[in-house]
Length: 384
Ligand SMILES: Cc1cc2nc3c(=O)[nH]c(=O)nc-3n(C[C@H](O)[C@H](O)[C@H](O)COP(=O)(O)OP(=O)(O)OC[C@H]3O[C@@H](n4cnc5c(N)ncnc54)[C@H](O)[C@@H]3O)c2cc1C
Image 1 (tube, rainbow, N blue to C red):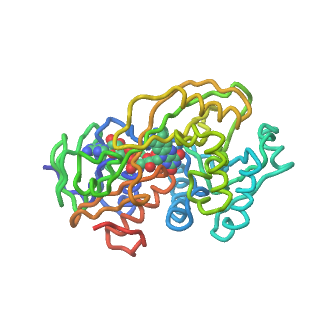
Image 2: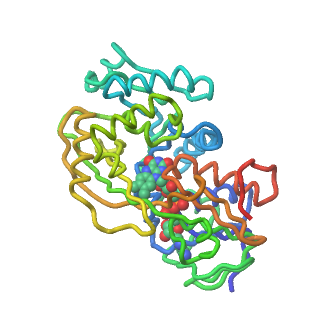
Image 3: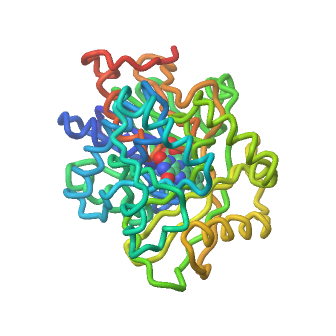
């Protein structure tokens, strides 16, 4: 038995680290347990897009806006790269253009999305004219881009410097109020927060089963442009409007959905839209296929990669060479975008059910810790 901690956290993904930061900055004694020797979950496999623009009006948009400043602070303190030049969402055809116009006219100002619609000369000047084949671009001014595989380990190192103790290569086998049993021994703590990502079976399995969670698996590629492009912004297309809640309910969104279903049904069947994320090394992470289920199939379909490369080459206007492929899995399809479970006094869990944990996770950790410590209510729904 080791000394008592104020907060024991399971999982060194973005949710676990966000909770650790929020607790440590309040002067609490914090321990984080992670079964692998370095974080290898969704938080390092993703696109690293901290998106404000795509979030649906309300709670998720507010969380993403609040997370924005936390990322900037962490990047500065922990010394990892963060591109703060926003995102570019390209309208590839007339209908996508009408959708962006409608979003700007009817939603952006009213709900505080900071965006600009670039057309004509402004569009033609972007990256030396590389994107002039599109109808317009929605510049999402609040969106940020990080390189997760470097940012997450840097955040761990920063938190260590703030006094957080990390136990890597340590599986947590069991949690109960006030006590945690792991492969490194038994630990006591006033609060235990389980941030186990999409592992619904090792800890708190009954409470998690009640959420009827699923997983989503994504095929991911890192590519090198075979042409001159020093991209500084995340890139999306009108297809992304079918995936992000900010655009839900606009008549043009439904019209576009019908058009995509009719003209490119394979994109709908494979859940494909396009995300392009620049790394700090003039390479790009591309993808965004979605396959849902109880388990993640290990088998990647080459055809899905081919469709995503084709979309990326059309959007970027040049050839790409694949240098790496991997699969990512995240927790998905609960009844809500995330769950904050209160299992027993001092024992809780925080889980994402949508693929936007990098966008909203920092503020979610901050607000959940405030609530757990009995500070001002955060206004988020918790499940008893
Ligand atoms: C391919 C992909 C692309 C994505 N792109 C984006 C994006 O661009 N923008 C965005 O906002 N979001 C994105 N997401 C979603 C985002 O990455 C996730 O929502 C987020 O990372 C979830 O964080 P987490 O901490 O809950 O989970 P994880 O990062 O998976 O962390 C959970 C950790 O808990 C550990 N763990 C579990 N059980 C135990 C145990 N019993 N003992 C010890 N350790 C344990 C695991 O090993 C793991 O490291 C993407 C996700 C994927 C997979």
